[in-house]
Image 1 (cartoon, one colour):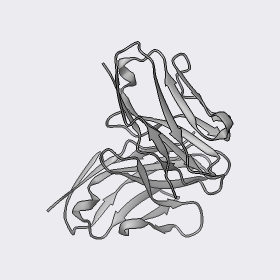
Image 2: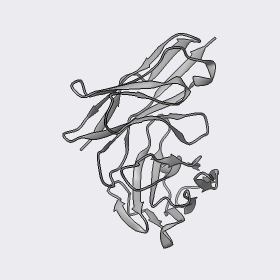
Image 3: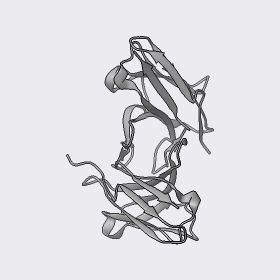
Image 4: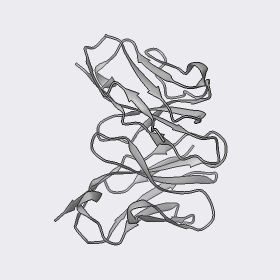
Length: 114
Length: 114
């Protein structure tokens, strides 16, 4: 079975500062990895995904993530955050191939302060 | 392209009452998911459909929850009878067939059981 651990429940940061949201996963088989963002009273929106190939994945809104198989991590980064990035961020994993379910972490609340 | 539609957006019921949620996925998406998101937690998969067949319902409390997807398009999720701990946001998502596993989420239905 797969599982996801998001290491920080809350991350406060000042506007224009860099940020890293940490995600570790556990799986005995190959996986796909995802980061989703959820704004208040909204559904989840995909930021980026890793299916295969290059371990550095670029997504929307200037976010990127790096897949590290040896450390079983998929940390999300942004070099300079904006107030509008304030939201809940979820890391998710699924087994690769077939109709496999997405398993989500508990989420990290990113709070960007002026 | 229209997104995933859910209704209602909000629902307040008393415990032991029944409630139903409706979801219309993106046109052409064969896979449909229902997730439960309790406040402060990540989404938890309740049931996954492939067309009108169930792929995974291992975490669906079958004594009170039921779901159907007639004709492989719209879906309804029902709770009968509701308990206080069912208070959550119920998210519907849909995706194309693998390997394109990006799930698109609706805005969710916020259920409050009092």
